[in-house]
Image 1 (cartoon, rainbow, N blue to C red):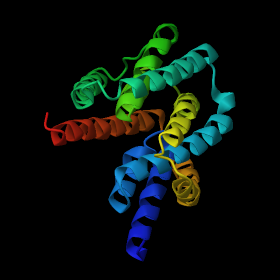
Image 2: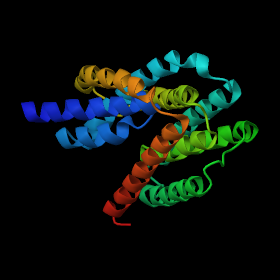
Image 3: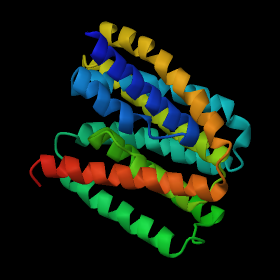
Length: 249
């Protein structure tokens, strides 16, 4: 790898770490496209599967005391893991680009609702009822299309969780799915030993970015954090539509 490509990958992963530290999510939105340019898509996905596993173990543990809704958190995460396994099986048969484009429209509708009614949110009781079903859908989207954030982040944002509890909950959800994804990628030969070593090297810029993002987020108000999450959702929704268009839909 030439020095320019190495620097590009380093900065991209570090920016992903910054976003992960600030919001608890979003690192693959920046990092995977960057690594796909430097390497290729399968290698980028393989490397980030390991990064996701490691960062979510760290954040899940670091923020574990912030969780107040244990039933919601764990049923949401466990059903996400089940959904990821189901989605992996359905990958060959589902019209994934069409599903992702439809999901993007749902995300935009949610953003419109929040902007027009900024005080709207789901109650905790409703969240406990919906959590397992939303987790399952998010997991299926992760397994089938590689992206659960439009479902998982939208749901947790609607619950109006404080930043630290949001990070803890989403980290455990992502971790549960990683525990099924990483062995699957290894079994399929997508995650190989050399890619595993590259992933360990990529942890350096990732863990440089995370504490910087976490520090910067301390200066965000609850309203500013909410807007940051909505902005992240908008970027993800645009990416979904772009990917669907590239697939010819």
